[in-house]
Amino acid sequence: MSTDVGKAHLETTRRDFMRYSSAALAAAAFAGTAATKVARAAAANDGKLRLGLIGCGGRGTGAMRNALLADSNTILYAMGDMFSDMVDDSLEKLKKSEAADRVTVDDKRKFTGFDAYQKVIECCDMVVLATPPAFRPAHLRAAVEAGRYIFCEKPVAVDGPGIRHVIESCDLAAKNGVVLVSGLCYRYENKKRETIKRIHEGAVGDIISIETVYNTSGLWHKGRKDNWTEMEYELRNWLYFDWLSGDHIVEQHIHSLDKMMWVMNDTPPLKATASGGRTVRTDAKYGNIYDHFNTVFEWESGVRGFSSCRQWENAVTAVYDNVYGTKGVAKVQEHAISGRDGSSWKWESAEKDDMYQNELNALFSAIRKGEVINNGDYMVKSNLAAIMARMSAYSGQTVTWDQALNSELSYLPEKLELGDLATRPAPVPGAAKYF
Ligand SMILES: NC(=O)c1ccc[n+]([C@@H]2O[C@H](COP(=O)([O-])OP(=O)(O)OC[C@H]3O[C@@H](n4cnc5c(N)ncnc54)[C@H](O)[C@@H]3O)[C@@H](O)[C@H]2O)c1
Image (cartoon, rainbow, N blue to C red; front, side, top):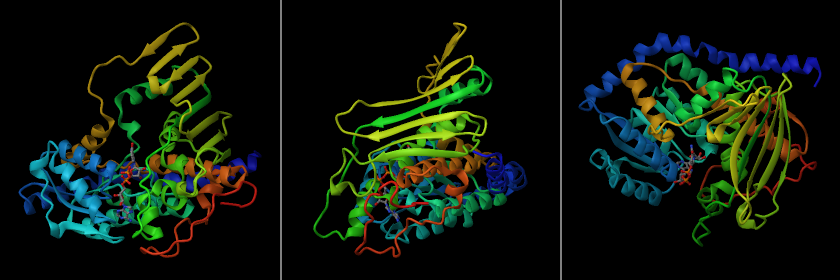
C-alpha cells in the first residue's frame, strides 16, 4: 500500500464518516425535538408510544418483545411483512408473550407487500426494522424522514449503493435528532463493553493482530411450494441469495467483524484480501452464496485482522475473537485477558446481561429522557468491512475501503414484484469484478 493511496483512503474516510462526529452536537441541539415527539404521542395515546414491526420473522418478533418489555408505556400497534402468514405467526407469538396485554394490532393495522413498511411507519412512533437487509436502506430512510424512533437490525445494506444511502440516512438522523439504535447487539453486552474497554485502555499493549472466527453449521431452509413465484421463493429463503442477505459474511459474520472494528476503535481497514467459495452447500436450493470465506484485513498502522467464517454441516464449529498485543492476549468471546507478565482478568459478574434486551432498554431510556442515540457510525463501518471482504472473495482481487465504499454495483433486481427473477450464478473469483 503506497502512502498516496493511504492518504486518499484517509481523505475519503474523513469525508464520508467524520460527518458523524457532529452527531453529538446534533443530539444536544435536537434533544428537545425528541422529547416533544414523546409528549405528542403521549397526548394522543394515553401516554403510550405506538410500536410498529417491519419484518415479522424470528428476529423482528424477538426485538418487538424486547421493545415491549423495555417500556410498559408502549403498545404494539401495527405490523408489516411481505406475507400475511408471517404477520399472523408473529402476532400469535407476541400475544403469548409477557406483554400480551399491550399487543393491540387489529386487522386494519396488519400490512403486507413491498410497501407494508410505509404504512407501518405512517401510523407508529417507534419502528423495528427487521426484514432481510436488502430492503433496509429504503426502510431506514423512510423511518428517518418520518422522524420515528428506530431500532435497526443488522446488516443495513448489502452493496455499495445501499451503504451510501444508509450513510445519508444516518446523517439525516443525526441532523434531526432521531433516535437510531443498531442491532449489532454485542455493543450492548456489558461484558463485551468491559472487555473491549480494557483492551482500549492497554490491557494487551499495542494490538498486533486480531483473529475473528464464526465457523458454524448449516442454517434453516424453508423449501419451495408450487404456488410460489421465484421472488417469493427467494424472499422466503433470503439467506441464500446475495441480493437479499449480502451472503453470510455480511449477514452473520458481521457480528465478528463488528467486534474486530470495535477493538480497532472503528478505524476503517485500508483493504481486504479474501478467498471463499461453495464446497459443501453446492445444491441449487442454496441459491448463489458461498459457504466459507477467509479474509485478511490490513490497517494503516500495520495491524492485521484474520477472519474466517463458514456454514458447514458436520464440521467443527467455533465462534471466537482473539486480540493479540505486545503485552498479552484478550479472548473477547470469553471475556478474558491474560498478560505476558502472568496477570489475568475475567468477567465474573452474575448480573443479568441480555444484549437483546439491553439495546431496546437503551433506546427507550433515551426516548424517555429526551436524549439521542445514533449508532450510525459503527453500524455502517462494520457493514462495509463485511461487504469489502465479500467483494474481494467474489472477485479474487484485493479490495480497498474506498473501492467498497464507492462501488456502483447494485445487487437489487430491476423490479420488486412477486414474479419471475433471474438469479445470478455464484461468482467465480477472477472471472468477474464484483465491485
Ligand atoms: N442481531 C442479531 O443477533 C440477529 C439475529 C437474527 C437475525 N438478525 C437480522 O434480522 C433480520 C431478519 O432476520 P430473521 O432471522 O428475523 O429472518 P426471518 O426470515 O425470520 O424474517 C424476515 C421477515 O421479513 C419479511 N420480509 C421479507 N422482505 C420483506 C419486505 N420487503 N417487506 C416486509 N417484510 C419483508 C419476511 O417475510 C420475514 O417474515 C436480518 O437482517 C438478520 O440478519 C439479527
